[in-house]
Image (cartoon, rainbow, N blue to C red; front, side, top):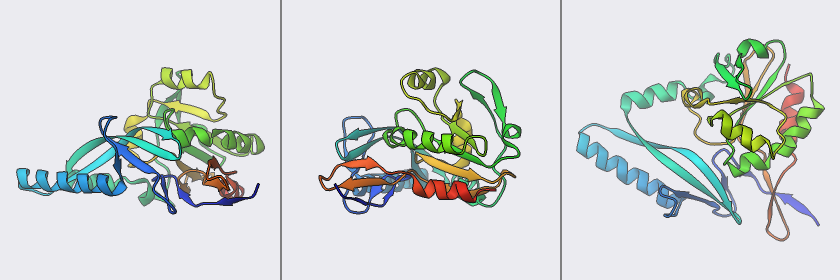
Length: 241
């Protein structure tokens, strides 16, 4: 059966050919992208009028669920003023490309403290993910294959905002061959990461070389979706020094 690749910006999880992204605040309501953006704009306008200064409304994805060919985002809204928004933009991950990745001190699932010193001397691939993110989980087998192929040459690190016990429970049923760092909510917020999965590639000096969403999905003749092979990710790994 022949397959063709349909480009999927999995960082924002939108398909170019058809609308497969929906949002929910309560778990009961359902909004497509247009409806959700209209809701955010309407809320922004109301809050700005009420506070008599410009306000902004953003959101965090707390959970993603696959329903057939649809990906449902469970979101939590956040309100901020102009000053707070400016500080967030300054810490945005994409603003750091070409620069050193921020230092961190995070715990692994064995409760050991890990920092940037542990990654020195080799290129590093960092995957930001969480266990309830369908696309994050879908790409793990391909990540494991790449981790095996480049074992010893690249640092493979996964960072989640979730608590250690939740990640441990997930890993009992799903092999994931990256170093697992957990309970990183504050660090992820500092980086301005709101869409998952997010993949960051560092050179051996710790400088950010590439920032990607997730592996593109493939659509077969039946219209079903399956994860791709991560060819573009391997190309990035080959170039890292």
